[in-house]
Image (cartoon, rainbow, N blue to C red):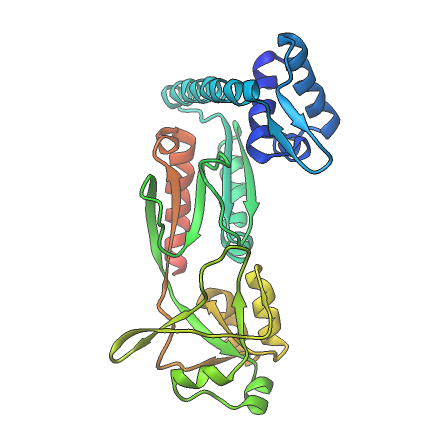
Length: 297
């Protein structure tokens, strides 16, 4: 493995906080990734990482070395992007992230055809309903439901994503069907939550305008598909993107709740660091995704 490849390993290990995670991201075994770090330490005669059974952190010199190494990798990536842009043959890795359900249903099916048309490009797709730090995690393109808060990122809106409140017929028979938004206070609302998530509420559309409803339930999860599964099993009311539950509504497995007061639609789009969008392969995938996904909404 070349010196530059060892630098890539070191940078990803620091960013992901784990030799195992850093190696996995680069498709290397933990043993190989660990050896790459040791090679760098032996080359310079310094310890770059402090290792304990629970935590891995860069030493003082390791942090300074990381800052420089990352700039080297970024410069190399930019040079590669420039060359591939002139050659018309995109090359390299695109790192994507998306929420679990959206990623499974909408993003993952796009990847095989894109890679077939662009054989020099590899895709790394990471799915999670938790928030991610796009810059720290070196994400090229993040598909997103909601309104982005970080103005340092480039936001490309794809389409509004309607949302619906749904519950199983059995749940409504047992607990009653809400007739007004205030009735949600007496129902088990199935909540999407994760550590450090903001205070939870649903914003419903009313004749007087959007209304923020503080809702609560007996259990929550950080996986949107689990919410849908709980709703199908009759455990409560869920707030879901319409495209995820449309087949269940059509089949009668789920019923729309408060159809005259639907949740505000989410904005569906993609986020990328401004610098990454200059990379032809990233821009190419973003354009391709927008073209393929917009008609679905």
